[in-house]
Length: 317
Image 1 (cartoon, rainbow, N blue to C red):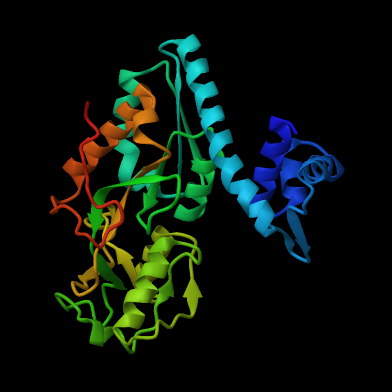
Image 2 (tube, rainbow, N blue to C red; image 1 turned 180 degrees about the vertical axis):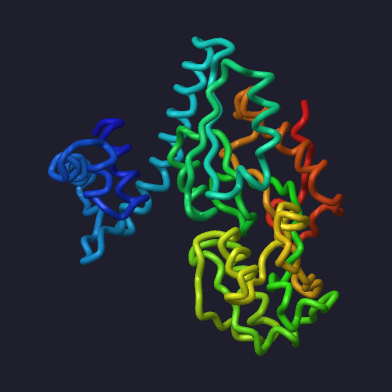
């Protein structure tokens, strides 16, 4: 059993596909299978179940995956830290996040950080959901993830940074555009543009609406919040979205955002494997983003006990 065997196994569990891992590693599917077979010979148990749409770990495979993912992540993180020590000032910070996060939460902070640390490699890996960000962190090789906060995840520490109230986005000529606020009962007959399918924001919104006795209905789904806003502004539907400053003002003259105060706010922020193991450069970048978010988004009280990892200690050291 080698580290490469375990790395391949963890990657297969994460993607659910031997062929996808083979493409990522620029090798054959047969080579990937050999790594798995070697692990199965040495452990004496089947680790994967084959299905028409891919593979999933067996109970024994899940046990090995849980242990191996954490250990390999620690090893890969330590190796990156060692490489950064050798490079001195020219280290790296690697962030995983959704497609529109940099624009809405990090753009000014990225500029400031690059000016202050011109020799540092700042790398972004785009994922399609917060859950994918968690998987990427656990796999190792990444420092930070910007996520929509969810329930606690084993091996991950979450830290809230920005509270986002919900609004209904409509076109300026929509009959609802003149309203100053909406209550939940008024949403019952509205067909909504569905938020991204695997996004935590969608699952949380659907759960809150269902709890209020409203069955979410939609004719259209989108890949990100910005697309939902665009369709709403064009008069092609209504969208309940978290309220972001970029959607206000002259950039969106035909858009109206109506508060829905009865919906619990959504929290976004950082996720890491362990804060106390974060490199100084990654800590500095996280702190820079937090400062700019504090300046850009309205001040809010600390999260309540309903928010995972609710305490928000400062990143500053």
